[in-house]
Length: 88
Image (cartoon, rainbow, N blue to C red; front, top):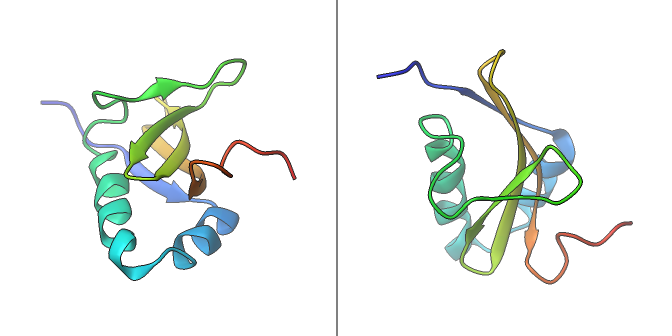
């Protein structure tokens, strides 16, 4: 078994996480924690043109980057599926 990854959440993603409805928050947090053991779980998709991945949790998307050498997963963005890919 390989060593687990550490999960780092950007400040902006942390704010997005806090804004989630309580009923969705627990599932999203559980999904983020699971990335420490498997940073590329079944159902993940690489985002075209970027070195980032996304996973789904209900209507929400978690966008993250994986550093295999440093063994870290950085959560970049968390948001509703209709808004998460929009540029600000």
